Length: 314
Image 1 (cartoon, rainbow, N blue to C red):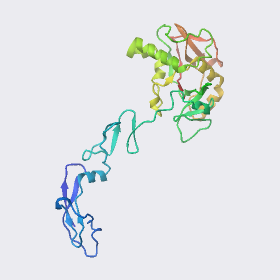
Image 2: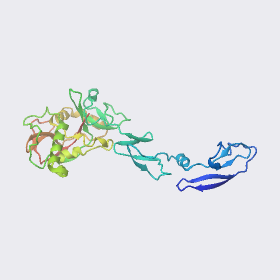
Image 3: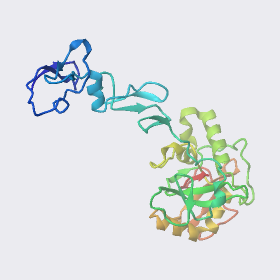
């Protein structure tokens, strides 16, 4: 069979156009490629011993054959991925908040972490918390661990500790009694408002200092900007633990460390931890883990460097 190619101006555009054919009587038309009932405008050739035709493919058909079938337009789409074929793409780049799934840009499911979901009622302290919001005492190989449960409230709201520390930072570089933040001049063990405290300081610091806020309140902005690579959508949802949450870590330190060890992550250690519980305009509550016990009356000046390790609500 002699074939003439027609250039259609695309990377996949060498499309066969039949000019004449030599058929073998013992071979049927379909085997030779004569499968069409007719061809547009008479373009193509008729099988010499039958009524079927062989027609040249259109550019759209050639592109689709090689997977170029998406126009990448509409809600959730940003652009096409790679070089197009006849203005169609093999896949699409999705807009923020969307992901390429099931051959289209679908809205990402909202993370179950970063707010109270009530799921903590199914968990216990020292359980491993996974990215899907579930927890287990055992390692689940099919899931990705994100934190270890350190506190569960009577309202079934929980908090979990990040699998890594962020380093040592100052609570604040200025002596200010933060408006809206309670001053714990005595033990802060009843303060479980890690994220409420963090939001109060973040909002205040940004209102006062704008884009330079992180220079004035480093510890808070470190946790606010933290997000594990396994679940980047949690950025902005991590918090500096409050005094009561630090006390819960202390009370359950052995079990928490065992869980962290099972997943090969950073143990509690013997650092001096910052809490988000404020004492006075120039000081805040801290926990010196190196002493081996939680001193309910300990506080430190805000411009001191102490260990920062985030928690997240679930």
